[in-house]
Length: 416
Image 1 (cartoon, rainbow, N blue to C red):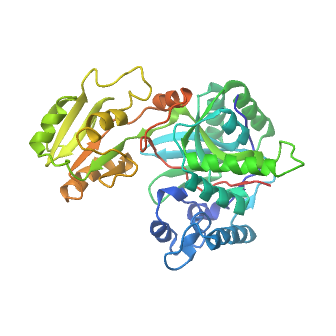
Image 2 (tube, helix red, strand yellow):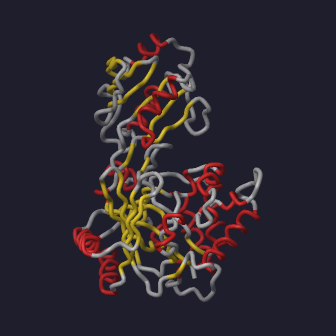
């Protein structure tokens, strides 16, 4: 069963929380991070992307960048921009996007649960990315940014959250520059904190990584290293836990993750459309934007027209948790055999567009000649994500796009 516990969070004063908080480190480039933090002395990006404090094209993974992160983290605490709570707490973190709110609990997940399979993953991680975040965590001796976890909904936890958010004024309540609303409550009642901890231990057998596989792996590996290097290890040290925001799975929203391709592999438009008919029912939808209507239905934009592509029965296996995924149907029926894209991770002929950017972005990329054809997919369901994780399988690259993203800086977990 899952172990999740309250902790003494390090947090900003409400007066600067909007300026200090930022998007996760891995959703932006250095230049974008520098632009976001420009003129904002409070921004957490000076800690999570500290290369922005150097001029020129410095290597983000150089020792001086990590040292700068550590220095800034110390300064932020000395100046009172980050202050630690006096008692361990759970925190409620709610996000509102397009009128829809999801409610998560910020707490500490157990490092051991990552290694024993209680915390389940659906993506592979890259060692270089793991190493970067491991250094960042070790240098600062803290989980600066949370990971995004999901759990099977429990009615009593839902009720606790509903009562607190319905009756108590939030500690933080602001709208970020991207229009996402962020609401944050501190649960100071010790009985409620103990009850939440007990409910996770008794009611929740597994937790699922939604977003932040590299951050999760890095945090777990740092905790393991600290345990192995501590001859007096007891098991209750803070390094045995890492910062997470956990949402009931039935509240989460996964957006589509779409593909755009630079050419038709030497085929004419007519030849390409003919080749598609072997695996799909192809329907011309004209010039009005067409969005996929259900699983196994795709949208394609080509030569100033939108098309509906419905996978023919027999081209996929609904009993195969991986084979049923639309990203695999698209790859196995179009990208590899027709367009000759053999490696989605390395091919320079394909790119990926998160659903948050809208169908218009797909059309734009094709219309300006940057790309030749665009494919939109029906969003993966949370049930599919959990099934993949439960069966020990791995999602193909660029399958899930969770939105909204967690804001970093609302609460930080110190490892000592």
